[in-house]
Amino acid sequence: MEWIEWLPSREFRQFVFNHDLFIPLLFTVRVIVVTALEWMKPAREVPYRSIFLMDIVGAALVGYLLLPVALYVSEQIVIRPVLPEFISVVPTAAAFALYYVVGDFGAYWVHRLLHLGPVWRIHKWHHSPTHMYWLAGYRASFLQQVLFNFPWMMAFSVFGRAPWWMYWAVLSSHMFLNDWMHMNVTWRSNWLEWIVVTPRYHHVHHSENSEHANANFGVTFSVWDRLFGTYVDPDELKTPITFGIGERVPLVRLVAGI
Ligand SMILES: [Zn+2]
Ligand SMILES: [Zn+2]
Image (cartoon, rainbow, N blue to C red; front, top):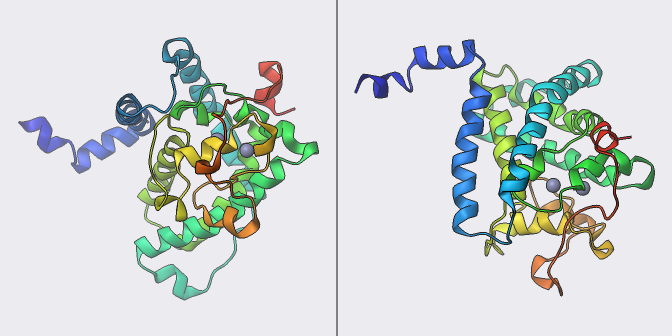
């Protein structure tokens, strides 16, 4: 039974971080948990066998190359506000909530910006999957990542002198939320949709039907869409939705966002 005692221990944490195993471990948990949920209550048929391997390669490219470089570049440019002292002493849970409200408000507007004609190409890769499931959501061009990093990095200031694990907690929460909103599940969640973005809510945003071109930009909370007139109720859809951008663009251009 010794290994069980070892799991949550300080030595285990040190081992994980010293060997850069946190992200691979988290990814393994995501594969197991999210795949199980999609298997139990799938919304549509997804040809996992033909797309999963390519998406793993793509996700690795994003996670180990595009994301670290984008984080570095954003760090150089972003302006971090100096917040009043009392914010730095709020309880961690409240700081977490504040981080998500402030960051998500900015993310909503960055997302709306990316759907405008001249810069739509930066965001096309994200909308390119023709099958919607949890791993489809990783696609984010370098410029898209830099732009989305700004509101979240500014909001991160609410943690004040954050403990070392806060960065990893926030990163994990973003990954799980991204998995969640793209997941291939049926979820009767009308009440939950008053607060947060759900899979079927975000799936409307990925529809290739031009009627939904300006629908459901929300990234975490649904309140912004309701406030700013971009909310489309998934219950009101007349026909089943299909996904994609309706055009063929070379993969290199999609990934580069040009
Ligand atoms: Zn979008
Ligand atoms: Zn998406």
